[in-house]
Amino acid sequence: MELPALLGIRPGVTAVMGSGGKTTLLRTLGEALAAEGRRVLLCATTKLYPFEGLPNLLDSTEEALAEALETHRLVCAGTPVPGTGKLTAPGIPMARLAILADYVLAEADGSAGRPLKAHAAHEPVIPPEANQIVILVGASGFGWPVQEAVHRPEVFARLTGLGPEAPASPEAVAEVLQREAAPDWPPVRVFVNQAEGDDALEAARRLAARLSWPVCAGALKRRMWICLS
Image 1 (tube, rainbow, N blue to C red):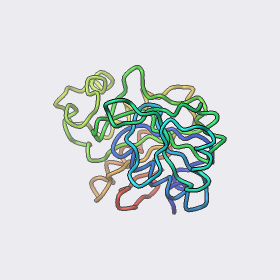
Image 2: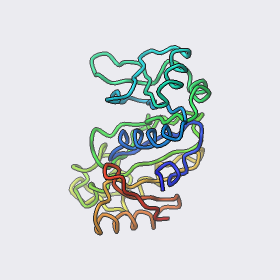
Image 3: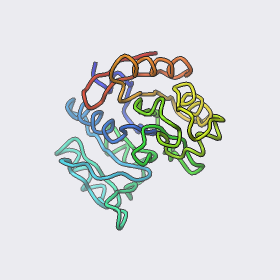
Image 4: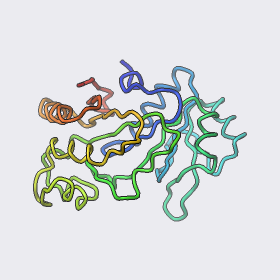
């Protein structure tokens, strides 16, 4: 099954948050949808790096974006952040982006390269237009000390009661996900990335057992995935 179908990706705005491969997830979803002839926009509500090998539209007008989507099907758009090489949200309102593109895949937080994450008060930045959320979890962080595996370990520790040297278990990650979820969020699905091998898949199943949302797992770079719940 193609990844968009596995995750139930619908036309409109999908917010992608979490850690452990968000950029890879956006590109994998985008390429699969574009191969079906859909117009797909990759962007951020926070910050991301431009996508190598794709058209990256900087400070684009609606007309230029519409033309690029019609020509290339898969494009990235955003506003340059001086001195960082990154892009933040496009200047075009999200509601308009959702009209110009069939699918808008928006990265909604950062993780500083860590496989697991807890959130500060100002994040994630979920656009009101989003009709679903995909939360990414990096299985490579399971079992590692909180202070090493988690972005914002102090928040993770506060939510779970674990010390900085305690292992970040799947159960603790599930507790953080549940406690951070807002009541007004659209439907949520979870994808556990980096789940290669029996131990990682078993950890993903332990996470899924603690969550009420559908959970899938796999290895994005190897294009392997299954649904767990």
